[in-house]
Length: 640
Image (cartoon, rainbow, N blue to C red):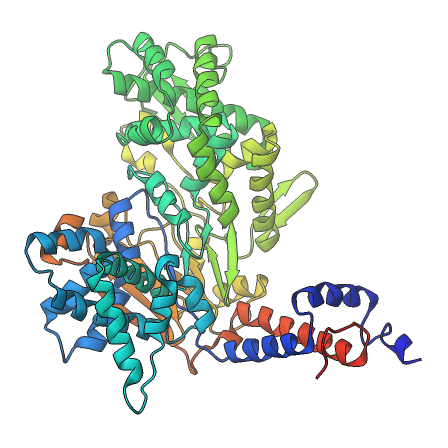
């Protein structure tokens, strides 16, 4: 009778199967008890520090440095520990050594600063810094973060305890002396620096746009591929490159146009081995009066507008017929009609436009696109990078009570969720975001025309959550009158100032806490004009502060890092990064100002996080397994 009860409501058959699988990992009562004790202790540790950054736009050096200095957090910890013991210059020297241990050691040796005594003091200082940063983690988690070659030694040094006769102190002094004597101090400093940077940030969020004007998006991705814990919310520039790698010709043409326009072809040719030979030969032949790069820019622009026109005509649901402008040009008059207004063109030489159908590619243009598509789809490095973006990325993410997405949730003029009709169904709000995410993933695996078209739409569509504006590429290319260039934004960018609207968006994603936030990038904050990145009574934060050098005159700063730790949220506003050389020679760090805009009423512990919820579920399962062992429903290897 008792055996029968085990299969009724207490433990279902399905749950019992799961518990049997769990018993393979925890085969005895003592092993289950140990894990329950461990997990319950973890729940009461402070939550790890999260950093949020967006709109990197290929600016590798500045981004790399902010990863190295943990957005200034390492300097704060150094100042906290050593403010009464070391001078500002000595404290900054420690920071630079942590940021760039190999390069800084080389400089110090050239200056004859490095001696056995210097090594000993420096190692002790770095161990003290690492000890402080490791204090909020379990010993097990710290061990996993330790560089393998010195894991045992660092673990010993981090967990020294005072004793009556100072035996451990003497023991650790001897360890440090031996490290120096056997010539391993440099490698040990490098290992400690790596650990310190690892412990300073528990998780990194990149809220879109790794790619764009900067020349080193590939280096940023390579750096992120080595990072210990991160997620990515795709930006419109990221999805453009992803679409190009999937084989969307319109995305390919946009990528090429952007990179040629901003003189950034190095990433195409050197990083991704994408040859422009077919395009440049065609361009020089078609537009012989222009310089090679200007000819290539014009050639790919015309091809782009043709390809975009074909997509718009294939998809009336995109509601973008107003972007069909090639057939609205009167080349004899030198004008184009947009709506009820006529604008003068700055160019009337379009030999590849066919009067029967101006959106039809010529045979030569078809061949150019065939060659370029082959180059993008067969670039192994690009494929590796795009697969990483798919693995770590998404359109949006809910994480520890916050909603992250790059651009917007499309709204209508009343502030309600706007809909997009696809087939017989209208998608709005979260359902639309889920549809966009699902379609973007299928585009990579299935690559049919409709899904590839949608990748282009995500780049620039009127209701794209990654774009959120009516992009005027044609006008900016061929019309002098700048009044035609204005790009209308989605109503979201008006309504996101209102707390009620932000709360409604958060609720739609299952986030009901008054401490939940929307975290966006995409639109540079005009700090110089007094604009605040924190909106809607702290419910929304825009973290695009102008990493891209082209936007820094507009923003007045050079990027934001949003920091969310167990005490609350604060924004770090960064000044422009000069160079690694300046850091090494003068210990010149990025200047950053910090602003706490929201303090938690109580310290946030792991039990309050998403990971904490998972741990609580695991504890409940382990408690069921323990009960099953004790009742004999599942056989244990030992009994207590």
